[in-house]
Image 1: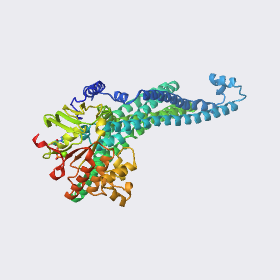
Image 2: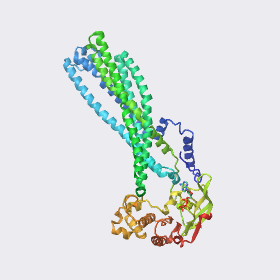
Image 3: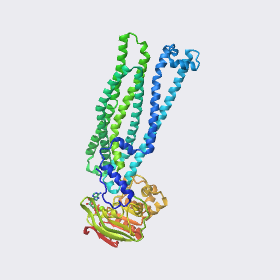
Image 4: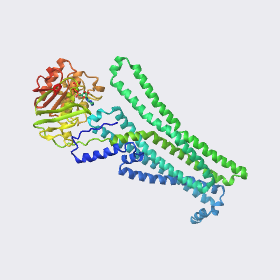
Length: 592
Ligand SMILES: Nc1ncnc2c1ncn2[C@@H]1O[C@H](COP(=O)(O)OP(=O)(O)OP(=O)(O)O)[C@@H](O)[C@H]1O
Ligand SMILES: [Mg+2]
């Protein structure tokens, strides 16, 4: 599914090669067999696991509190309806004598007060517990989203071109959240199961016969439910992710080609596609939301059905149910807690099925091998040497073959050749966007590798044919992630001859619209030049930067570029010969 860079140009660092070995092993041999738990184990840090253990302990305490809160009701009702029992019961008479109560009323008042305090504390504990749980889950969401974003930024350009931007966006925003919820659901399952077990032990003590009957019936039902409904829910999870992606893709496709879609008049088809994808997505949501509460109804009906049948049975047998009232009320309460707990467990389990796909997706993204690139200082005072460079996108289809070139500092070089000849590819190799399959690039005799690649790229100002300006102001667009320096921005705007125009508007605060829609082609190109100059690059690269402009504007901008680049190294890809007539050397890639 994912293509990996096969060249070995940078496997010199041992750190990398061991890292990549680990990734290769885990990817090739286990990719599909890795269990959910192994994936989670990989996604969680040691600290996370410590917090999880703590949360599990807190869960255990929570379950104990819940069980006490239910079981305490039985003695309370018994003593309230029959005060003699206080002294008859060994345990309660001990407490009665220990605190020296004078009568049963005093005992009952103290008992009631204790119960109220206990229930208040129980609520406080519940709130704290849910805070801790949410905090853990959402911090994890932040962490996953952050790691995914890191990974996408670390992608090599060639890997990036093989990815779908919508999918990356979707994974960072939605799927990461699902994974954190997945972990939250696992904790919920643990919590509910512990509660169920404790309550169950309590019920066994109170009446083992009824409990066993209840167990058999409920177990059969739970198995049936997980086998049928849970499977369906899992399938809907996959459909949901796929259709959400499809919807996003249609939106991006349409909004990105707004003018063309209008001109082609294909609004109906686009709407139709959207209608289909969105409907499918909503359908999966409808099925999920409908199926989710189904187990609850089934379990409640069965559980309370059995309880009512038991009361009816006792009534028929003894014609008097007074003696069993405390037992029955505790049973009712326990069922009231166990059934939702069972239901929550199934629900949480279903949700983990629903989110399972997200876990796979995020795991795949996070183990995806990206190369470590560093900032080791690199000087460029003399030459860029390309030695026997080979490059291909697809195996056996070389684009650049045994290519050699020496560029001296300050050279102005033009690359020409027919479309598809490999001009952009070659320049992208020189500027460190692609890495050669074999051969080497040397800067002042120092080999370009992952250690110094980032330093090298920083020396380059790149002006593409299609500049993408985002919906912000000029300043943000020019700085593009770099530190904001207004004076510097004004300086580069002046150099690229756009300042006059900006002054007539709101200066650096001028908004450009999505994709720079509010600017002309020439103005956009000038912003792109300003952006490229912002870091004071030593090398300027133009990849058909002016070919979309009319001849006059192009020659004006080129004059400006040659002025700006007087002391810089200039690499130009262009079709029009007039654009490159001032270059000292012309390299024709058609003849390579
Ligand atoms: N990311 C990619 N994946 C696969 N093949 C690619 C990729 N980018 C370019 N190619 C192929 O490599 C060849 C050279 O492309 P390149 O963009 O370098 O050509 P070019 O000389 O710049 O052409 P143009 O003048 O049209 O811009 C083309 O056949 C192209 O289809
Ligand atoms: Mg090109």
